[in-house]
Length: 267
Ligand code: MF3
Ligand code: CO
Ligand code: CO
Image 1 (cartoon, rainbow, N blue to C red):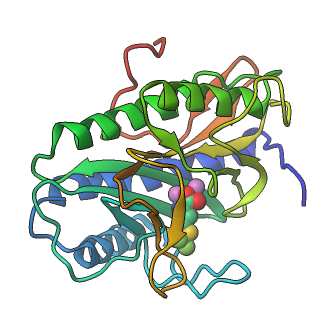
Image 2: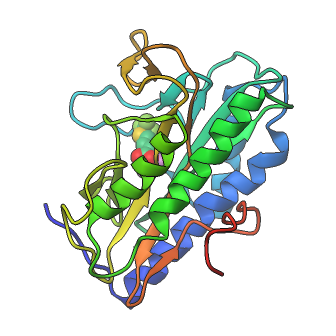
């Protein structure tokens, strides 16, 4: 398969799906407190999607070589890098958790994730969460026709490593549309001027996974999904779905509760 370029009507479909995904996170935000289990978060999200008339893209999702994913979203706590499966363990004060929501609405996919600090956390954990958010936005602001994917990856890598963190290499952003994961791959590291040139109508995610320690990851246990840092250091991730417009970018996964962009992002 190849890159799909969305026309005006298709972009409307993407806008709706992406806003709904973000609204699931808005709904969950006040509920993510010490004592709640990630399984409860999953159940509440599933109810929210039902009310929206959307469907989880992750429930039963089964790429080649994987078992079917068993939940309506991913919850990745502390040293879990991505694809954490909701479970019955309560969140506790000081945890950091990524909640990653992908919904399908009228055949269109919207994919977004945010970090949550449970109660309060260490200064190091909060700094990782905040700087990973900024790293994502350093990638987003590059987006416009004519630049290349390597420009995005480079911006993220330079910022993250410049702050003493490391960038996970094994997982990346992705084209998205009528499929969950389409071409192109969107690496969160790289060299300026390399890889695919951006053109209007492309829709893809930017979703850097940034580690406090070393960048290496490994599979955790035998659930076939959960990825953790090899050195057990904390990991953070944020994700938006973006559209390449004629002049720049539009972030599609925005809603009333989205954290505002960092100050360096022009209004
Ligand atoms: N939402 C993840 C992404 O950003 C993919 C999760 S696949 C799952 O691409 F099966 F683990 F849910
Ligand atoms: Co994604
Ligand atoms: Co996602």
